[in-house]
Amino acid sequence: MNKKIIVFLLFLNVVSFSFVYLLSSDSDLQVIFFDVGQGDSIFIETPQKHQIIIDSGPGDKTLLEKVSSTMPFWDKTIDLIILTHTDNDHISGFFELLDNYVIENILWSGVSGDSSRSKKWETMIGLEGANIVYSNNVNKIILGDVALDIISPNDYIIEKYSKNANDISVVSKMTYKNNSFLFPGDITNKVEKEIINEDIFADVLKVSHHGSKYSTSVDFIEKVNPLIAVIQVGKNSYGHPTDDTLTRLSNFGIKILRSDISGDIKISSDGNNYKIITNKKII
Image (cartoon, rainbow, N blue to C red):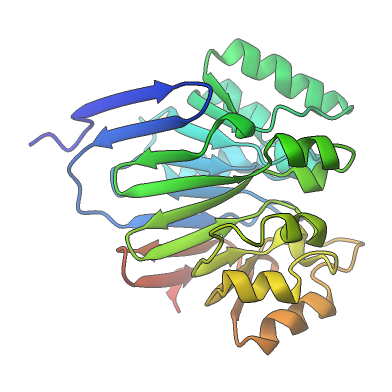
């Protein structure tokens, strides 16, 4: 049986947006938290070989180099990119990626900032020809056995917090069988309170805002209840990650991984168990 795509169905309406794929593959789910310095960029490959990229880091070419070395040289199509928000340390690397890869689908809040990079983003995605979807119009994305629930921002959060780009970050939860990952962008504890009653339990938490003291509250940690916390951080003048956040995570016995210490952090899951690989070492 051809291990490429057998069936592809894309359905979009004003309420929900779903990818449905039927494929055959024995691979695990791969999640790579790229070391991009002081910024976020996460590469995901599903067992069916679909690629998702969440954010792109601050450098113009860093993401392109990372993706080029991760994906086969002949594969120039990415199924979905998610921009959590338009701050430079999340958006900048997408421009080179858009120039060099075909992007099938783009998900973001639709709330643009005032910076030149935000305006460039809107221009480039308009020219890309990708299917553009907004977070307030989507509930779930399904790729084979992998489900991506879009938790925030909805219309209410966009209206209430639009003056703070961090708080209108796209928050998503990915589930593969019995393993789950939470990607909260850069939300602060204000929006953590807004989504505390959602299904945010996850084995792996991407720590919000590089370990800022204004995020990852005790109540939020209790609800997520992660086993692993990944902090994407580089050299910075903000004191990230703060001792407050590291202490809160440590008090719950959560394993903390940092890209400034470990480099790229890869978590591979078969849906029931996972393994962590950093610098080619299995943890």
